[in-house]
Image (cartoon, rainbow, N blue to C red):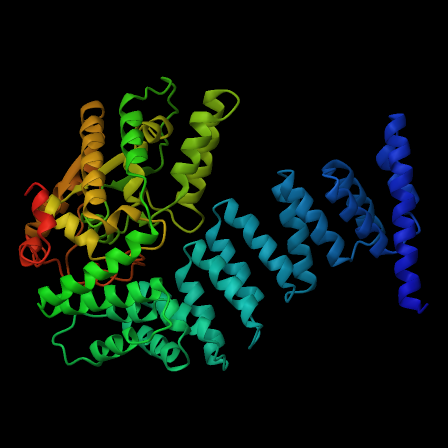
Length: 548
């Protein structure tokens, strides 16, 4: 047996002996954790870690922590011991200790990416997204890194809403010579959301020039969102049609191409061809995505009949949460983008937290007020984060209209801006978009769209009756026809100081991640009013909706 095998065997033997002694003492009911430390006192670091791993597999967190604390006394410079102990501390809610351990590892070794990711995840859970970006940026300071690790870093930053930093990490690796198409694709998506359309096109075209994987990543659809086409001679038209001739496309890739072609033909006013492509695309997606229409209707009725306990937390005095709600494609992105140009407003995009927190509050265990306080603290941390002193904090998740009653229990000073659009235009706009899987699964079938519109309007009528002082309705048609007066009235209602939100010199650097990422950056116009009339002859299903 070689020395390595002998050492491994010896470590396992010491671990087994220590665990056996621990089990005997635990059965005796005394000194169980102390026995572990005593049995491993002269063991190498690997044996301590092996013992800790065995205890983790037993779900014995208390003993694991004790072993690792003792191991740290023996091996204070060990990165692996500190990393393992930080993980246990995090699980036990000792975030400060976990953060201190992880930062000590990174102080000794700035290139320790395992510690970088673990610390970043801890900070993310606390809503400290600026700190996440700082940590990840420091971890990837060298010229080149393993693409898999870079993508993990990019995804983490993206999940935290730090899209500029995520794009910068992609660009850093590309500038250093990375030819990985995944990085170029991710860069293209992020740059599009940042409004850097020319560079985004460069990245997306690179992906398409280096294989067919980009078709499965919906890169061609991304290309069509970078501009409004002036005529059918643009090379994107021929390129997308050529891709459609491929026989080995997945159904999702084919649908993505069809949505892209539908959008391109809509731009040039070829509505018959646009409708044909869009019908094919929606048929494909609808066949693979069944929206639970009955469950939706039940959930609406349940919200209307639900009466939460009368408990209400104190309103925060130094900030105001503002929620932009309504169905997607009803003007939510446009309104959010314009309000976010105010220096006292900070927009956080579409936060996913309220459905999760609502479930915990409504069905959780323990005192109801305690559940409310925990939910309020968690949501406030994710909304306010650590990089803004703005007084008005904006969440534009449209489906937060499902939780108006709970939100007002958490934050009695919350304000809701309810975006409403004429049903036929709203239905058509939904039907023409390719959404992220699972996001708006009702949007591919007009019967489902009708149910979604009807249900949302029914619930909002209920909320407007119960909470008239907390909700302001904004008609899309009024917003685009007379934005000056609409925005002025809203600023006054919210208590915002007067500010020009329409000037061409206004800050237009907001991150837009929705399907409106190109349109919302253009001057406000009335081009989409009564847009449904262009499609009435080709999509007669639109006539089933009320013309209001």
